[in-house]
Image (tube, rainbow, N blue to C red; front, side):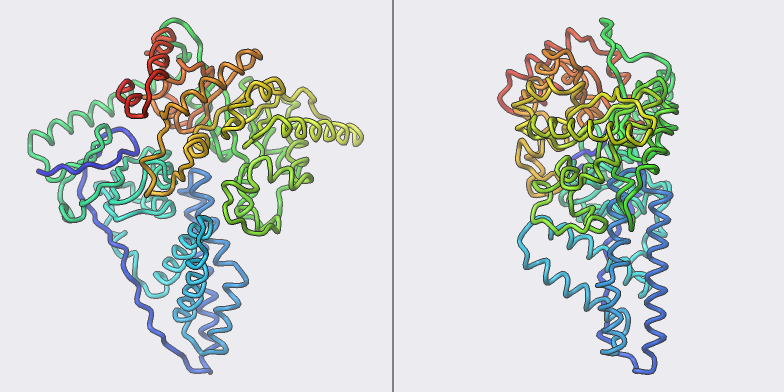
Length: 566
């Protein structure tokens, strides 16, 4: 029996057989064809693209449950349909007499060379997208690369050097027990996707591939961040009992669906849901959520040739609002970087999109689009339970500007005699340090605040959560983060408005007491995590939570805070 330490992505135990997948190196011959066969080769290339796009669409429709997954897969579709790519490969086939796999390889090598000479994060991410597409397309043509996927089943624990978000989506279809990677970070998109699927995952298990063989019995211990290889009978029995207890706990949690989320000293905590697509509303209603605390609207703007109309948005918002009555629905205006919308907005690429034109900034740069979204929300609010929230607010002046645009929208709707409800509560996402520091003046102009901890941690600590090299610096319980949450809550309460947390922190049971103690009024989590968080609230005392938060705020390091929480 051997134990290897890693970083746990999600709590819980998984027991299964090791299924090691090495990313097969695809060798492409620099093959040429006869000139008279060029037309046939062009037709085959066209068919290849259609087949791979259809595969991607199948994954998007059936297995992409989050915006992260949809974005990754949709980006790959866009690359395959890009005229620059198609035209270049067509030219290499028809004019240079290259085989289609040779032409595809040449094109992607050219792109990779260009991106590698551009020393910035954005182009590094784009290179990964292009490499994924090249591998997917060439795997299809060469009939190689994915042969081990057929070996995965509902008893498998997948082991890889690293895994992309799109690959997580593909293997989920196999109903595997879990995933272990040698590299990776807890806060990468792949990890967040696995967590949203309730799929056990352990990352950064250094040296694992040297210690494990295919079909060996292994255990993922998500509670202690360990993988156990070839466990002894006693250890296996212990973990089997733990697994049974977890399954029993899940059954008990289902009994909490109709129980109100309140602490042992009777403080009611609004427990709401984050959703990314309208289809998730059914789960939200099923789990008796107190509302939708974050409706990410980006899905309407991604993987499209044209922008959604006001009417289309209105129908979606109204439908969700009606299903959620009488609970509130908080619509967040589009919060993606310009790189994600460049196809339909005709925007140029940015060197660093995370610090560029994203969030409220992209709305201000595209006022007609912003107005359509506001008007759709105003019209749908005839139902009476819609709120509007603005992302990536950095200064109160942005709230002033947004309010002015809302008033313009009201006048324009009134002039056209279109029915709407002018009583639309507005709020700001607090996820930038400048917004925290000025949260007193921002709160004075809002009806509510919502703290987006994912970006807040990233911006406060200057840490890219997808960068494995600095993963250890991404610390949700860093003293500066805790003080930021407390300050925001204090400033919100001074203005008699509520403050919510809608980031990953809210979905983690170990942080619930801390957040309540810091003054957070509402938690908004993924539907699948709701009952676990409710259970934590029901077993917490507000008084004890405040004492815990006080102690945590006195600590000097993240490690000291985590010691208290554990």
